[in-house]
Image (cartoon, rainbow, N blue to C red; front, side, top):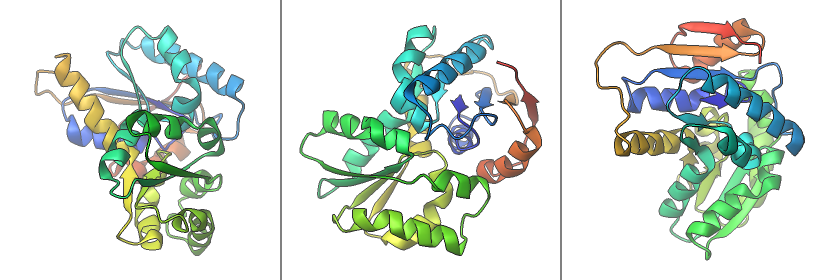
Length: 258
């Protein structure tokens, strides 16, 4: 599994709960985060490098936990992968369409994810009558990575970002970045209980479990699973902040050279 930094650990957490016997190799590109403001060419190059690195670890499944990479570089990743590849956008889109009652869905994400229109395309493929309203939230990733999850500044910024979506009477809001589940309590407070929040981490865990079962590639033993975390820089910061995302202590964190 890979992400531009720490956010993908929300997916790891959901996978650990859903698939407790599976070994997990995670790569967070902490030297080059954030991806959401970078060019399409740069994101594709980074994604290809990380894919090559993980395939050398003899994995049986690749999960693109970063919404920005899924939106921009999914085809490039699929083209070089020798194993099945899953990404968070399709999983979240399916969940959103199932949950929306009035067919009015909001999507928040990084500028690169929103500008790609990947969520709008995925949702319309499932139901072309759904109205979709998108909002880029470029400050959310740095605020989450600084641990400012319930800070007054974060709440003020979130209210500004969400104001135009709430004006459109949405009943479902897709959290289109794996950092955003850590803001769920704050976001739910702002939007109210009538709006359903779609958590990409939980949606991804369900899709991965279904694929592993269908292809009969699950670990059959009951041995303690092996979790290895690689980063491209600052492992100590990754570990300190990442434990909040993961909800548990880390095992091994190693610096990898791509």
